[in-house]
Image (cartoon, rainbow, N blue to C red):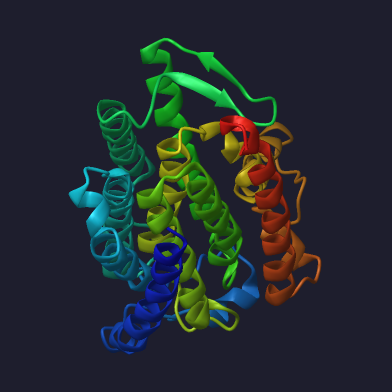
Length: 330
C-alpha cells in the first residue's frame, strides 16, 4: 500500500506541474483574469487580471491518478475514492460556473448565494446517500479523542451531514484569499487523511488523499507568492468538497473540528465581523475580515501568513491524527 501512496503523490505532483505549464499561459491568452473585490485590501488590486481557474490543474491530476493507480481497487469493488472524486468534481463544476459568470460579467460576483447553497446541498445529500448505500457510513457519530460512538436517527444524521458538508466547502472557499493560503493550509489536512487511510487499511481513500497532497504541492509551484495563477472557485469548491468528503468517507466527520481549525477560525472571524457590524451599526471587531485580511492590515506579509497558517494547520493535523489512533486499537 505504501508504494501506491508514494506513486499517487509523485504522479499527481508531476501531472499538476505539467498541466500547469500549459494551463497558465492558456488562461492568460483567453484573458481569464481574476476580478479583485473593491472592499478588499487596496494592495490586492495589483493582482487584478491574474489568471483564475488554476484549480483545474490539480483536479485533472487527481482524477487521472484515481482512475489509474486506483484501478485495482475499482476492480475489487472498492469505490470510496470514486465517490469522493465525484462529489469534489460536482463542487468543482459549481465553482467553474461561478468563475465563468464572474469572467463573463467582468466582476467578482457569479452565481447567487442561494443558487450555490441549493446546488451544494443537493450534492451533499446525494454523496451521503451513496456512502450509506455502499456501507462506508453508518448513522453513528464517532467522537475522536474520547473514542466513543453516538448513534443518531437516520434523518438527523443526514441533516447534520449535509449542513456540515456545505459549511465546510464554503469555509475552505473563504480561506482562499491570499497567495498559496488555501493550498498550503490543506496540505497537512490531506497528509493526515493519507496517514489515517494507511493505518486503517483504506487503500482507495489513501490513493485519493496522497494524490490530493501531491496535487496541492504541485499547485503551490504556481500559486505561492507572488501567485502566477489563482485556484478560483473551481479549485476552492473542489478542495472544500474533498476535505469534507474524506472526513465522511472515513466515517469521522467530527475530526473536522480540529483538522479544519484554520477554515473554522477564518469563517468565524467573518461571521463575527458581520454580526458585530450590524449590531453596533458600523463598529468592527477586526480591521478586516476574514482573519487573514486582519493580519494583513496589521502588517503581515503574504509569505508570513502562509507560513503561520500552514504551521497551525500542520500542528492540528498531528493532533487530529493522534485523536483517532485508538479507534481500531492502534
